[in-house]
Image (tube, rainbow over all chains, first blue to last red; front, side):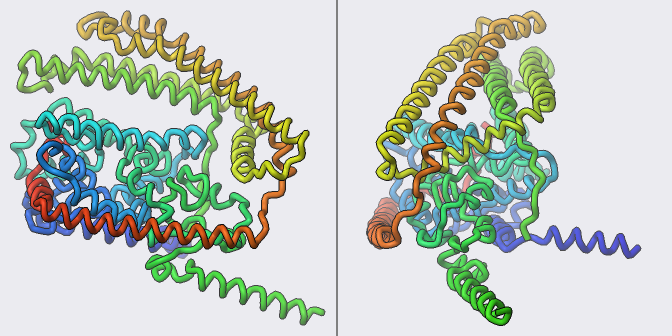
Length: 320
Length: 264
């Protein structure tokens, strides 16, 4: 009996979510705060939907209280010829400047889903030169499906949000299944066609791959991550490396599950996994994240280092 | 809180094989599903999910998946057969180490002979890369041309015959690409090892003074860029709001976008 209790307790201790996962869960809940929508099967129609949320969260999801930035961008670009996309681009610039890809690591519900799936114990496909090369696919998708196709069709007065329509698994998961699983939306079942099959296959594919490898959608496909990655050296909230301290040992890069070449580059989702592993404590959080993880702020890390040095000196002098 | 994860490192051969076959399987899936969709549209079927229409064309999807699963099993067998040899070679480490050393190189610190040797090795690496890309892309043209040609597939025809024909026309070329990749990989590894011997001798750290000067300059530039982006973002949001784009975003977000969620 005691063994069972101790095993259960150790299991619980090993599975306590870290602060990043708690923030991710809160963000997901905040984006989808219209819980009533899941019962009624209707989407939220309040004024808050005029504002884009930072992460990937379909606005056709019954719980969504904000607009998806990627969907809004495509629809704004699809209005080419008779309207402009300044508002959405302005919001994306602002989010990028403040957070960069910190959004991917901390504020994206689809990222949380992939993180959870990756926790399932099975063999894992590790990062390699191939996955590093494949990580550039998202820039191609951004250019073609999010920008070129919507604009080209938009000029012909056809609204085609190509990425949402043909790829986005977040829309299928949150939007389509969120609505279809509600008995009140029986009429939507008549609309199912080959497109739904295709999107469901894509969704299942990414879910299965998320079990086998770390965040496949974020690493290879997500155009929103591609947009935010341009701001990764400029963002106000995130991770930073003290170049004077850094010995370029490469441990941080090996520790990271993303296809980074160095901490804070365009692939870095600023999750902070590399901070405890740095032997010279050169990596730390800046901005509000330093308050959330006080142990990983620059000051604490420096103080710890000073204290450790003092203690070792004292110990050394006593021994002498 | 972070726990160590048991990770099975997959060899390069396995990755290349599965990747190529994933691409082929993906092509077939896209083609077959597109066929179901467009056939349904052409025939004016309101419900393209009828048992007959899916059963007729679904066979090809199963064929594609069977190819994939079989190759996956074959790759896994290969992996376990050559597992020990892979470990001895430590291929990943060589590539990673080479990348790391190359990113930190400072050629000004090299002596003339070493520089010449390094540059020669880099040149050979580039040539091997170009030959590898040209050859593999050239070989890829044939299977892709076969797969994307709808005349080669008949949804009402004999599936086994089509599958064999597909194998004959696609697999030899894939095997050719595979051979090209492996050979080029071995040659690259040889030159990388030679280059690394030179790179390892380099001093990696710059003087502290130079680093701090660069750091302050970089910070200034970053702050200027941040200011410009912030101003642009605010201006864009205001201009957008004046243009009435807020209403457009709201209008789109409060109505179910059936296209966006894949309902058509």
